[in-house]
Image 1 (cartoon, rainbow, N blue to C red):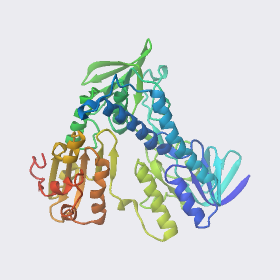
Image 2: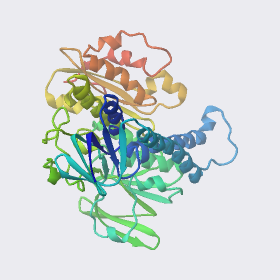
Image 3: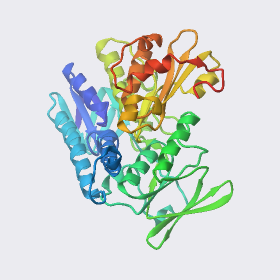
Image 4: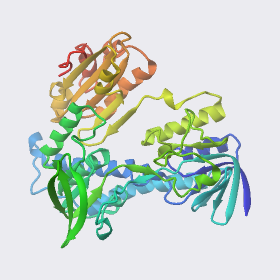
Amino acid sequence: MNVSYDAIIIGTGQAGPSLANRLTTAGMKVAVIERGRFGGTCVNTGCIPTKTMVASAYAAHLARRAAEYGVVIPGTVTVDMKRVKARKDEISGKSNTGVESWLKNMPNCTVYEGQARFQSSHTVRVDESDLTAERIFINVGGRAVVPDLPGIGGIEYLTNSSMMDVDYLPRHLVIVGGSYIGLEFGQMFRRFGSEVTILERGPRLIQREDEDVSDTIREILEGEGIRIILNAQCKGLAKRGGDIVVTAAIKDQPLEVVGSQLLFATGRRPNTDDLGLDKAGIAVDRRGYVTVDDQLRTNVEGVWALGDCNGKGAFTHTSYNDYEIVAANLIDGDSRRVSDRIPAYALYIDPPLGRAGMTEAEVRKSGRKALAGKRLMTRVGRAVEKGETQGFMKIVVDAETHEVLGAALLGTGCDEVVHSILDVMYARKPYTVIQRAMHIHPTVSELVPTMLGELVPLTDEDAGK
């Protein structure tokens, strides 16, 4: 069966459904193809379910600290993992069914459930149907990378996706990978009550961040009883009774870690290998990401790639911004570009890390004259009042233009505080706009102007310390 549409959208992650709504509202006849669960990674195995579980872990952690606040909880605080999972499933499930219902009831939109494969540059096959359109949007997301280690075929392992099915408490969770996914799950399950070991092959955690950020996060996690092993090169896997044995090496010195469950948090890869992109002539890079320009157009006229599959970002907010860029250019006549956006993201351990712009290391490497400020959370009244004083805030600004170059805020509420800095960065206004603002007391945000009033030259290696 051959069916023609004005547009075809492959995948229902954060970009796809909103784009379908804009295109249909503009009068286009749209086909949406989904082979799995509606809503993509964020809704089903990413942001929504994991942050729901983070919230449960935070509640358990705070309950154990209740006496510090003068609150008496009789008995031992325990976690019911089946109820934790049920809560997560309910919240995630509502988002999933909401996206599905939205698309299936959207005027001028036809939903196909099945595997999409290009037959040519503008023809996509789903089961027995060949769909054609002048405009095709690829929004297929990504999945966990599983390293091809010796012995992997003989063990059971977990990824961020299969962790969503865990309704029990692992006795000892071993995590391979010390970046965002690994750290969030590590702290989460430690707070639930598991023994946790994190193996990181690099010399420090989350290596994209500055050393002081990495070191402080390590201190926070180790302070909660998480074992962190750096410079650990995993060599193989094996079963030993009911346990999993991870063999590794640290500078050629052998290491063996034995755990009850194993989680791989070793990166992501795009879901592009089974789309038939070669038949369409659509270019990909060596890692499989679809090659796009600054407006997310592929090398094939009339084909775009949005979200995690294009290598331009690995977050829900970058995927949604991809939709905004495409819709603006295609429908609104507004020339928006990927290069217009400022890198920004958060790490949802507790306390959270809010990041915007360049790291301090990147600013130093650029050679530009800069000023820096830093403030420990022990010197933030709101953090002291809440009993959550771990971490610090720091910011780097251009010494000549006074524009903010970047910020790393690690502390209570800092996943929200960072946006006041990010907004000024987008406005391309000097840091004095924030410094002179009257912020509400008592908040974490009110100490950002104070920090900006204590800037010192970044050329001094002790700047901000």
